Image (tube, rainbow, N blue to C red; front, side, top):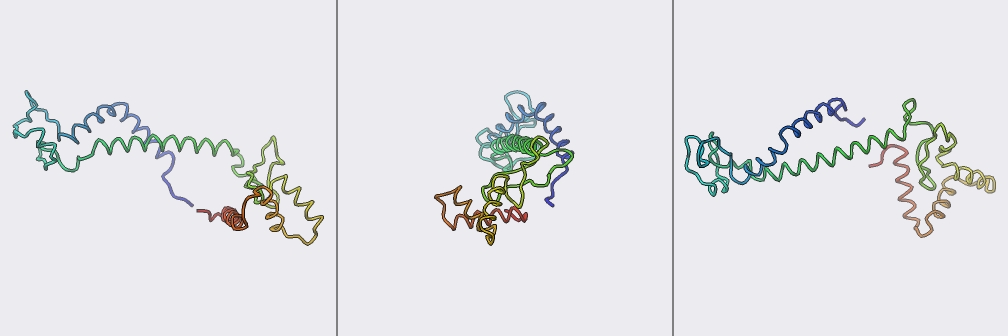
Length: 201
């Protein structure tokens, strides 16, 4: 089983993050630019000189010299801090949108009573994804085939009593993909088998 934090724990952290962004996000973006370019902003009075001032200039701070406890010079660990924060914000936005979309897609295709009904999966002949529902209980795989290919397979087997399903699958796949080669079929077939066995990458 794939390991991951419990959704409730992630949700709790995201709520804290949302509060932090609401309360301090905009100010942190501005301060990150200051820290990256000039070092710690000081709380001294008059002329921007730090308390107990060291006399260091903004040019010296911009050079990224190690800072003391009063933050008179820019510590090296703050170099690029504004870019790092911007990247993290972009990643958090993209990831949150993708998670929401993925969860919505999963739940829209699964009933609460039976998340994965029997007969769910992709047809090994044409690739059509099948999933039976209350409205369409017949829309399910049989012998790994979608309804249309299963019906066609029965006709094919009746006309060719000694035929193997793999032979039929190859014939049908080439009909669906007339410009494909045998190697492409074999690659696709291997991919489908991996998905069937739960070993797909």
